[in-house]
Image (cartoon, rainbow, N blue to C red; front, side, top):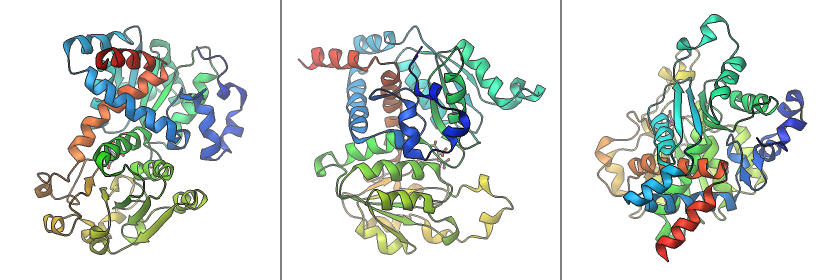
Length: 361
Ligand code: NCD
């Protein structure tokens, strides 16, 4: 139980009035995350720590002794995977991360199997889950709902940490963490993420991964971000205003082929038509925002190609074999990053450092 939880000291009405930067500290326990809900609660020190821990867990997990050590770390804990929106990758990634660190899991993946169909409120549904577990990992179609749950639980006698595994079209912070980890590993011998030119392509208006990652990139000096997509799917002003405030260099562009040879990383996204009101995406010509095999010729030789997946036509399957394509690495990286985050939330990460130091002597 985290008694000094700051979410106990604010009403839900007042909390909702805060901007993202102001909300961040409410999700922390000292320097470490308690909940993991928005990109804005992380700072550069935390990002470096997540990457360091992920590397350590990755190498410890390679041996039988190491895997057993990891599995013992949180063996007294249970987690609920509540995924009220489609997911295979993120669900399995969190499940694997929980298994790596020994947490037992339960899952609800379909609202039609919960008492919500009997008229129970979503608040009560999640409160019920919290009675059985020590952590809730949730994906939900309603933006901000996981913040609501975090606030609600912190103000009950059974407060448990909440991780946002994708909320509406607004945030996907753990995807952004794994994207940072992938970028950091990819640019390890090229001076790090600092100073790199990074292009986001596709549905930037409704892609929650972009919204979270664009913020995390503000912690890397000299980064320039490019936002490239059809006019009606361009990046929102709320994001560009944050970048302006942070003094970041960015460009909103429409000519994808012109940008390809200039950048160090390209982050492709699919059209998020599940948010359409009247099939409006069908009328948008997105063909100019596809990465095709012939584009490999104009891409820098050490650039990286990323995609949160799932993909459609925007990322040509023929590109997969090129060493610059990192999206399948992203998938695997997510498992280590999520294991690292869970250990930080339960304040068990220093045990990783001790084991790692003994290992590397
Ligand atoms: C993304 C998501 O759910 O926002 N998928 C994922 O978690 N890797 C991207 C998407 O669905 O397009």
